[in-house]
Structures are given as C-alpha cells and as structure tokens.
Image 1 (cartoon, rainbow, N blue to C red):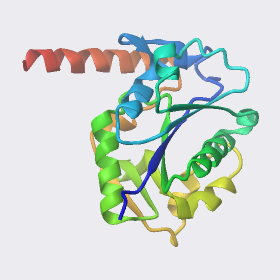
Image 2 (image 1 turned 30 degrees about the horizontal axis):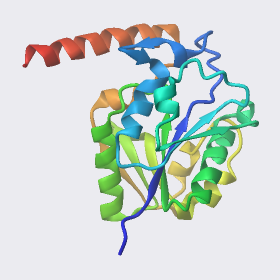
Image 3 (image 1 turned 135 degrees about the horizontal axis):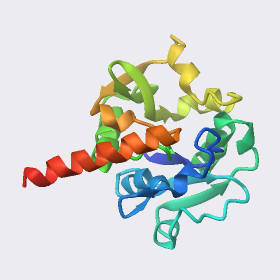
Image 4 (image 1 turned 90 degrees about the vertical axis):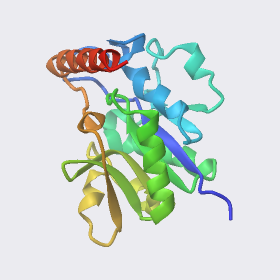
Length: 212
C-alpha cells in the first residue's frame, strides 16, 4: 500500500491590514518573514507545496530560488480579498488536481514552524488516519493542520475569514491534536507582534549557540 500523499497549502494571500505594510516582506533572519515557514515546508515530507497569493502579487517577498523549487506550485487567488476561506479553497482545488490524499494548511505569518514539526505532524496523521490532525498549543488547535480529503468538501463550503477553525467544533469529525513547542503556533499580525517575535528569535538563537 502506497504512502498517503500530503500536499502543503501555504496561505500567503492576506491583506496585512493590522500590520500596515506587507508583513511577508519584513526582514527575518537571512530572508523575509513570508519565506520562513515556506522554507520549512519545502524541506519537509509534504509535496507539493501550493503557495496561494493575491492575483497581482509582485512576489517581492519570494526569491526565485524558492519560487522555482521543484516542489513549489504558485496559485493566484482572485477571491482572496473575501477572506481566508476563499484562499484556502484556491489551494484545496489545486490539491485535488494533483490527487492529494490530505492537505497540510500553513500560514505565511507563522515563522517559527519548522520542518521537524511538519514531518512529525505528517507521521502522526499517517499513523492514526483521523479526519484532521492539528498542531496544538495548550490544548487549542491551530495551524498547521492536516485535513484529510474527506473534509475537502466541508472546507470548500466555508466562507469569510474564519478558515477551517469552525470545523474544530463540529463533533462528527474525528480530530487529533499534536502538542508541540508553543512558539510554533505564534503568528504575527501587528508591529508589536513582529518586534516581540524578532526578540524571541534572537534570544532563542543565542541560547542555541550557547549550548554548542
């Protein structure tokens, strides 16, 4: 029996309204905020990685080396301004085209997501075969989330900006939670979030160097 194919859907079509500038293009390490999670996804077992962007995105945040990666598939979503559910639908439609058995949804403003976390979540999903497997921080489900293809119709029926969160509350779906490092679920919406995240990353990297 062949291994389940899990595509990655990287949602990078938000409006950055609360930030006041394109947060994907903000400096982050040796790249941009928007590429941090994408690098993790491209190096993971997920394939392909479907990157959902606005229809007229100039992609200044996304270097050619990542855009031209053999696992990267760019999808321009004309309806992204209507909310995250519509960007998700664009990504899911591409996942269906490529024949994915499941789709891992990631957000472009979660720079602490790692390849190790994505691979562990994928192993967890493949082992237990739930309807969905969500990363969890203190018992609260959040992206990244792996959705089985049996849930694709319910996800495609969503509207607005809630994304798939509302499905966590529906009891007929069998979901499992994967607890991990609390920083993984940290997302960045405001300038204050970004400043705190930069400090957190620098402290974390300093501790890592100190242990070597």
